[in-house]
Image (tube, rainbow, N blue to C red; front, side, top):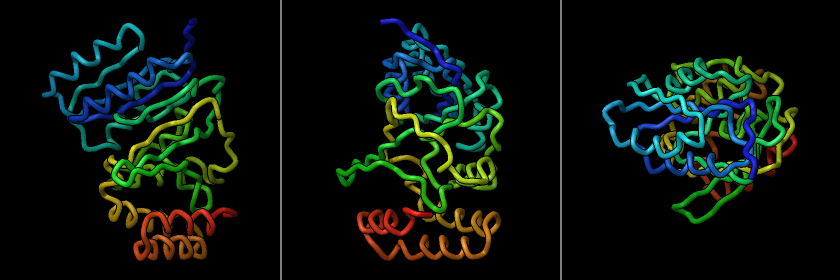
Length: 243
C-alpha cells in the first residue's frame, strides 16, 4: 500500500504516559495519509523508557522529539506550535487515537469527528460544537499554524480560550472532514479537573462574549452540576442545537 504524507504537523503532549503515547503513535502509523511530522513534547526528561518506545516508530513517522521540563500542558503545546513546519496543526495528545484515513484531502482548517469514550461508565458519544459553536474537543480541530497561542494563565480551559480568539465566528462555519474520527478517552487532565475547567470557561465567557451570551452559557455551566452526566448531555444537545 502506498503511503502518503499531508501538510499537517501532529503535536503530541505526554508526561509519564508511555502506554497512551504508544496507542497514539500506533494509530498514526496505521494511516495511509500520515502527517508530515509528529512533534512529541515530553515533560519528564528523566523517563528513559520513552526513548526506546519512540525508536520503534521512527522508521515510519518523521518524529521531532522535545525532551524537557515545561510549565504544564499548554506550555508544551505552545512549544510544539512554535516548532511546527507544516501550515496546519493537529493536537493529538498521548492516549488519543485516529482512525481510517483521517488526514486525507485536508488542506485547510476544519473539524474532525470526535468520539468521546467514558471507560468508567462504559458509554461513548460524538462531540458537537457547543456554547454558540466555541466549545469542542481540541483534538477534533485542524488549526492553522498561526492560531492564537495558549494562554498559560488558564490551567484547564486555555484550549477553549484559544478557539474563541482564533475563530471569533465560531467553529460551525468550518467544514467537517469525515474520512475518519478521533478517539478521545475521558481520563485526561481536563476531565480530572472539570470544576476548575468550568470556572475558567465562565471567566473567558465574561471577558470575550456579550453579556446575554455570557450569562446564558454561564448559567447552564453552573446548573449542569445539579444533573447526572447522561441527562446533561441530552439537555445540552437540545438546548444548544440551534446556538
